[in-house]
Length: 303
Image 1 (cartoon, rainbow, N blue to C red):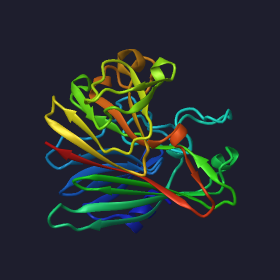
Image 2: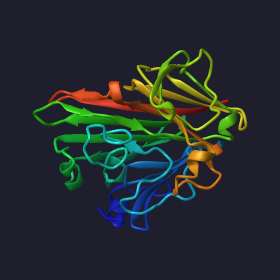
Image 3: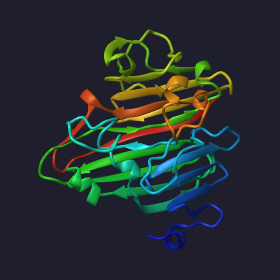
Image 4: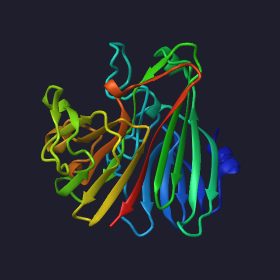
């Protein structure tokens, strides 16, 4: 569907418009409760700013905004694997969903006199030439994005095949903070995790909040707990409520790791932390034929 067709079918004066730039189409949302941006490539939310708040999502100043290139920042969708493909076969990092163009199936304002208006968009993705070449041809995915004073994301995968569908998934949220070194992550105390920066050693977190001190890539297993990100610089708490997620991933490349990432803005690493609702490794999903599973997260801003 072209940008003009999207505006004709889904555009809402003063609220929702579609813009094409550098070969990518994005939805721009303006409400009294928030502003937001979503690219159709990857159904990728790159910007969400509740009214009266700092923007919540980080987007790298050096990210490639071009067809087929993964966007660094916002909330990339990792599917049907997380990180490198784990079955020994070739495939792009974090799967193919984040570089596919999704179809917008629904968009509408949900009036709310108390909480402020919200905009719901639903994106869908089915088998493509690329996914079939990678062995995935019997799935359907629906992604519901609800933006307002909260950001609500729901990723539902259905198995339309005759065999079980095994996959990993993550909502790879890049959260803006004043300084990651002065940010505390709550909800992961006394939880077992895999430290990918230490040869995948299995460790146990302490009882308190997590404060990162170095390049971190930690996969917390068997945890459905909700999370908080307490930002002492900006004086706010981001509240993350997970749905259908048994894994939480925490990542920041620090100065040493960011130097190796060409699409990460120089010196920008202190300004974000990735706290991700996921299902990976031993928490990966196996769907029997005809069944579906929903992974979700709701992000709110508290004082």
